[in-house]
Image (cartoon, rainbow, N blue to C red; front, top):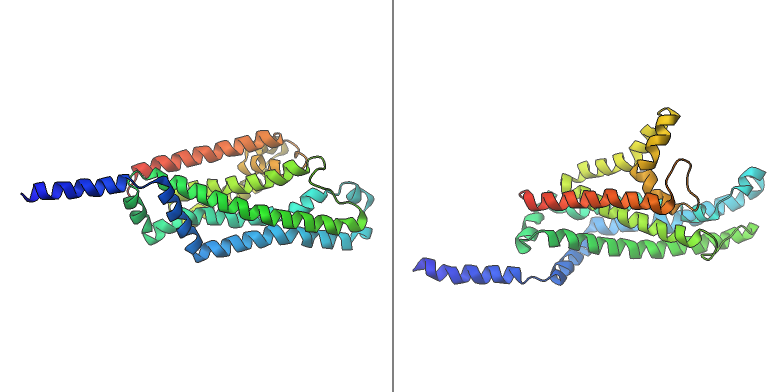
Length: 276
């Protein structure tokens, strides 16, 4: 008798969980993201780095313009100078991308999340979508501030450019795309490793340590390896002109996206297979 009484309750409970829409999962992840103190601090650091470093570099450069050599003036790059803050902002975005998922493993909240969404994968897709949208929108605003403020400063010596100038719009959009995909990559790493410290170490190793190791290798080996490094492939789209011994801007970015897709696929597989 007790068995027949419990059966409808279990069925109803399962039916309620199965009706949880993806929109509901998105709202849940948005609530988590905006309620975390670490989110606010990481996004603030990323915003300040992206919006503030460009104008600061522009002001210092213009103040010392007369002391620059003719070669330095001829090779001056107003696009890279105005958007150079992404090099620091990507670190903050990457750290936050890790913590979006690893923080739940640290606190044990991931168990509640996966109990609410027993299929599991919608949790990962929602995290990636919410985090990507927020970071892209915030970095877009910061990049616009940095670009226009820097170009206003560059008018002092008439070396300013506009978004319509050659290579500028692609570099501008590419910078935003690179940082967004970097965040996705780091969320994948956080899902795989499940440790904040371990995931951040893996991210720093991939994006910052490997290029340093490659730089101390013999030039013929370094030139062969360099185009395939995630940092080299990814940042090519954020440069107005391709670096030596590197893929084209979109070719390198496609490779970087490939690395990210593989990471996310592995993360999705392990999320389904492992215990919380």
